[in-house]
Image 1 (cartoon, rainbow, N blue to C red):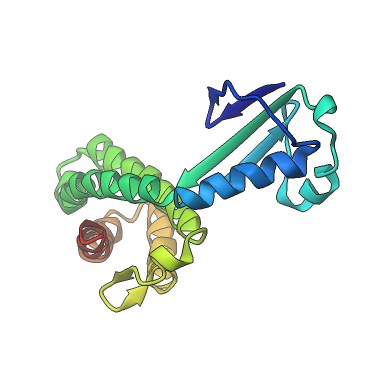
Image 2 (image 1 turned 180 degrees about the vertical axis):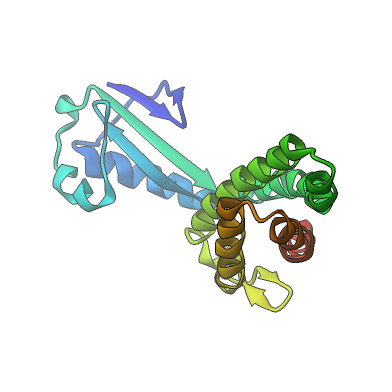
Length: 196
């Protein structure tokens, strides 16, 4: 059997494990020791959704040609969030310049900042979903007085308004939202991440 952990081939010998459930139990115990958890399993090149995992537990070791296990640990999430905070800092500088860029026909520069923000926000949402895997570690994470879900709920209507302004090509509203709504919210998030 070919066994990969986070894309790296493992050179291990299974001793007493007879089926997929026993293999995964072993890895889950190792994950717990390292403040990590399994986030994806691919059996014979097929990703197994969590809802179907129970059906596959009895798969005998002899029927497993390839097992790929993806894990994430608390420290990886923190490192990724800190890296994102650095990226968001430069995006904030760009957001502050959008009104001027739009007034001086530098639309491509403004568009580049908006695209960077959208990509960074996607990354943020992904990382936030991962924090739910470690509630003991991340339940106390606050942006000012808000938990992460309250923060996103507060951010959501403004993002919808921003999207509408972009669709309507309302440059005044785009500039105002970028400078006075999005940037301050990101600045608060950055400060909270830096305290982690």
